[in-house]
Length: 95
Image 1 (cartoon, helix red, strand yellow):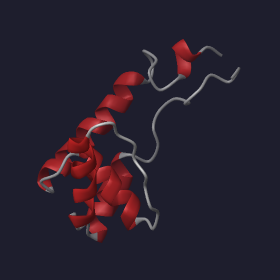
Image 2 (spheres, one colour):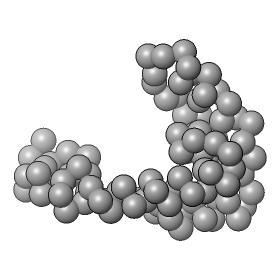
Image 3 (cartoon, one colour):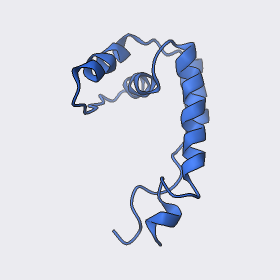
Image 4 (tube, one colour):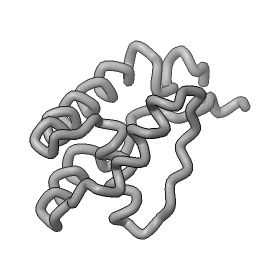
């Protein structure tokens, strides 16, 4: 299998993943945060400590603000329903 056909950025899967991000964007807008902040808050709510990388202080500060986002059980259920998994593999099977 080639990545061009089945990876997350292939023509087959890319739009499906964009659609997931768009739906998460709607939830993020309701929570007055970015999609990245929503993802960080979701990860924290699931009991993990995310360590997102960034080169810019602006994004570091934005990421830190995610700890102030309160996600209800309904919010978590909506996020899980919208994005059970990304479409396509991260790498082609030959890697």
